[in-house]
View 1 (tube, rainbow, N blue to C red):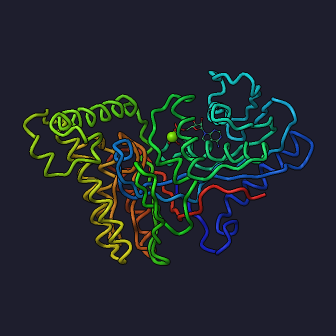
View 2: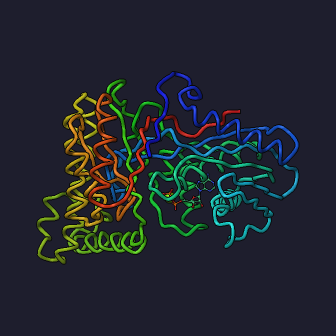
View 3: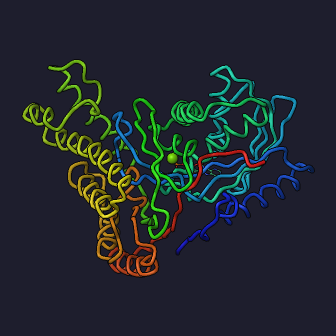
Length: 405
Ligand code: ADP
Ligand code: MG
């Protein structure tokens, strides 16, 4: 299956026909459910990370873009403590009180909304009750961060109904804390950050330690970001993700014995790592080597993109994949097959796995004239070698979350 946005206009709404119909749909459904027009409509996008994988929980650098797939919420204020939210994806309505925000074991999607209101209360904001309808076209659990999209859009909805505003960097941090504390996922800051702060036609160079960031323009024409979902169920991902995190911590603790100023792999140079190579397990050394080399690749790739060297940028994407495959060991047969199929297509600048790994998606930079050929060739080769169908998304870089009405 191929999902492709229509190109291309200056206005955000016109460049996102899928979102336009999502807005119409949530407004219509809101009216049907609550008998009135919504007071506000908000949106927040999913994201794809171009380079900088497994660096965010090591205080490192990432280089994601917000994309043209998003969660949209229509709502209005209630003058009591009740939140009533209906999901058009799950066809379920969840109701709870802001005075007693419990985890919902049945309608799990509602926990992302609950999490945000819980975090708003804990940080001294005063959310009001609201009626709302939520929809979205970010594929769920495919690695395009639909969770960040629903969190950031929920935050904007509570800001609109509660009549307060939060700075967009603080909003991202609040959403990350919500996912960690209430949903129980030990996530980094990247997803929420780019969903909240993305810039149209730009990728976001982000330092996950300082939260300094810089939008870097993507080529105006001729280059497409193509995301391919392997459609492989991701069984191993949680346990292996936690294992990688602790292996990175182990490398830091070895090096910190001689240099106590080092608190994360962000502080370690390749030269320092090599000095300590004999003091750590081989596996731990290789994990650290990935993170340090990946941080270096992000810094280089930002320079290359800023100087218009897309070929050089693509080569770094390819190197990133090999490092994730061989040193960090988070790839799998399906991801490798998909990436190798992409490498075989002429007109591909670079291709790599993106996200936590063990399934999920790849991201490729493709000359726009070659996108059709890419789709056919990658789909056919992937199907022949794995027996699975890929889902292919032709993406554009979009603005971060906003209130549209
Ligand atoms: P990812 O962030 O990679 O898409 P996650 O497992 O972190 O995957 O988050 C996916 C979950 O987010 C979904 O199972 C659902 O609970 C919630 N979610 C995302 N988008 C929506 C939506 N439009 N409506 C309701 N829930 C959503
Ligand atoms: Mg997620």
